[in-house]
Length: 428
Image (cartoon, rainbow, N blue to C red; front, side, top):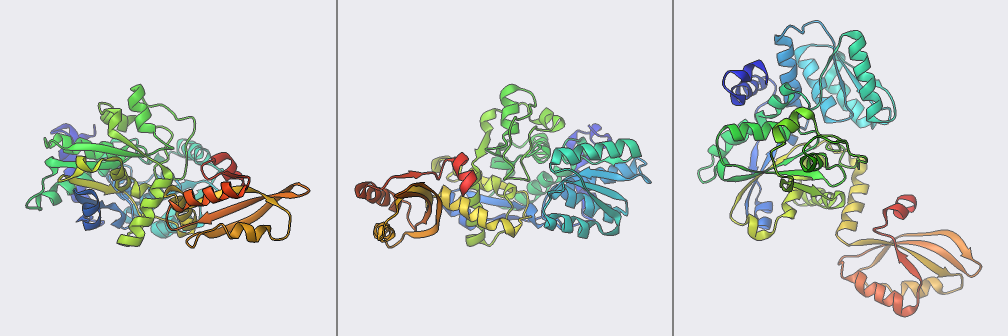
């Protein structure tokens, strides 16, 4: 534990961090969401960390790390970080705030939009170095540089000062909930997104120390369940494979320091969020609420779908929205995944006869709500037949039951590859 927290526990240090943080931005709002409340039967509040100056909570931990490092005498050295996302932007913003030189290591494959935003936030105080094709490459390069140059590494989550900074989210929630006449944080279910664990460990530590009987749940991407696996095995473990779609939370191994605070939770408190279902939540929040969320920012909201209606009805729920740095170039992929999850879009490979009128015969089988979104010959598999990839979108998922019955009755040879990730990954 850091020096500020030793005397009276964790909360006093968090209070000092939160007070200092107000030099950067006001507290983010805790908003009651009528749409989600009506949908779930609960009273749902969203803690809008997507409304910080860098559109994520990462600014909090980075600021606290710098603040304490500078107070401890780190006045002349260079600060270093490795990140391709929100941590880099928070780091850059804080470098400019304190007037300290910082170097950000990013993979060569980082989207230009993220590079430009990091450069804008840091201004003349930040240098960006593109190293390697993958995060692990630039992470190693950053550590080597820091060791050889005497620079100070600013980790994204695995450090007590980072955790303390992220815990200011909990302090704000508690204060804001006390402003609600008929809601108390102690009666609430708090849902926290998890990547490396800095936010989850900070929030749970603070609220537990407050003595309020708060219930916690954690939301992880199904393809990057590092906290759940660590709780099952009672130690941090490195996942052999990670799905990077939820890039803000796709962490192969939970941080050692965060896990030391989270290790007594039951693995059943972790809700795994399927990536395609998460896309449906992102589109839902964009279309209905006008809220732009990155995949990691939608995790806690999506986890509400894991609860049976009767378990939420009448309760107070706080979902932490961790970030809104969404690259709209990804929107077509997000919409595609959402449609596939909702059963409104499917892909088939048909064995198409090479004869006049075959296409017309096929089109006659489609219903009034069915639309062909892709039609592509893959290869000629025989002299009289060809393999055709066909994407079909409809307005009601039940339409596909009717459609496949028509295909079968008409004698068409086909294969539904919608859920076949191996084949779909090659040709869709």
